[in-house]
Length: 374
Image (cartoon, rainbow, N blue to C red; front, side, top):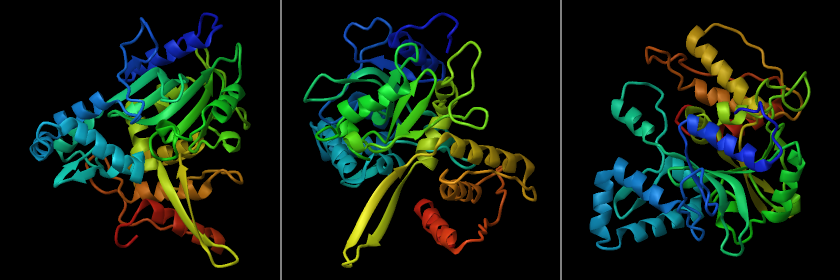
């Protein structure tokens, strides 16, 4: 993003961010009336989808399944598909549908194709390349009012992230956080409902980024998604661009974003019992913080190139998510392949010096991997 000229409005920041996404292979649309910069988005407020994009993706990548679906619902196939998809989204959530798809009357549909661990299957790699990343500017998301969100990110027509933007010339990232807490109430709003549609919400200024995976009005809790600067909070200066340029340049880079959604993000499910013995189930959507994603990604790259037998040190402060970082790394290492498509490790063992952490790590790893022997 080019920040060589003075930026006094959020609008300019927004347009430059969208242009940066286009360079990363995103299709950018707009729900802003008369927007000359980007094509009009066809958003379904009731279902919180881009239905045309969902249908185009399925038809083009899974013609046999679609043909079976057409035979099952002769004359009403598109409407029935969207209806069935929304039922599954409301029941299981976007993350589950992106990773596992859904079945209807014997027809299996995938809504996202994950990058395979090896390059041995050309068809799987081709399908991965068919994934469509779409960003919609100024999205009017509600049937109840005309509120709009600055930027909403979609994968194959399904919403996965919302972004409220501010420029530090006029407002700080805290203004975006306040906007989410006061004006983005999830009640009755499919797009904002926990896990059902958008999976993460970013409050982003030209200087800082914060995120949350669950909107809950005034009780919404945001975590920083910053790189850190001089062993402290925030982001380092970036000559000629914004401090938060890494979002468009790195995090929302096509392969990185698909990797985060399909391999990092997970729904953590915990069960506990109160003093009366009542069972209490809790769900939390876990999105990696920047330092967690960076640590795991760098270690994976090093292990892929240097193979087994090396030692690395990652320093984590208290409360920085060590357990999840370890679990993400272990999960990824057990399926890591080198440039010759050979497994790098035969097994992955986690060693810890605390029993409490040991139990916590076992529970965390089990959220990621359910294969026999893990």
